[in-house]
Length: 333
Image (cartoon, rainbow, N blue to C red; front, side, top):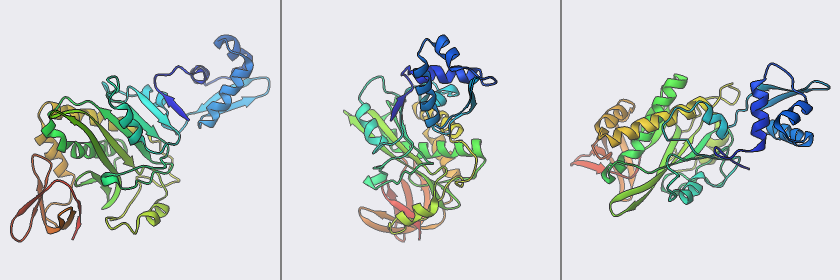
């Protein structure tokens, strides 16, 4: 099942009319006459609307009444309160997909797809950094974002830091939960991973033509089940969820705020303010001054995490020198 933010589908006419008259019942005949569709079409749309998670009451001889919204991240629901300039203005929604990242990469070379979001309720073949499998069950926020940047190619290494910082700011603003960042692009709660990101960039002639930011947020998922899937991973350092399965909390506000914060940090890159991004990111990390080990393609490096430099590299002080690391997995030693 796929929906977009730019298709004018029939069920939306029924849904919007019911929602705008939520205090009253509307008969199937009234809906048919006003919307100029058949009674059978009205019934089919109501059935589909209910299948999407909306609560629609029905009473014999009175008709239908809108009661409550869905919890799904449907494009038209996102668009209602989105205040960004360009991010999220075009949305592709999947109930299930193999990988939002793969679909977004196929779209990314189309000029109109700037700020476009591809999101899914769950992924069957989601992937994280370094082509690792990313488990994406119901209850998370799984999406990819296409950006055609205006900043320079040498700022590309800051994208993961800027993105994880934006998520931290959004979580703290919307849910008042203290979160931290872990180099290069993880977001943690009490030392356990709650979100991760990856970046696939299309670089030509020393320019970033576009990049696709993949984001996975454990919003309200089954942690016990997830831990069993991941516990044998050599880089596993614990996993958590922002909320418990039974918590009554919606994903929409966080998703929309995250897009707002992403737009802001990327605008800072355009304005050559990456030092501000690194400074804010550094205030959200607990790594600095601690003994760490970093698994790299050169082997494991042990030392003390000192800082992030202007290129987004992690600086580790070893016994003999300072090591500058761009790619790796860092954990407490």
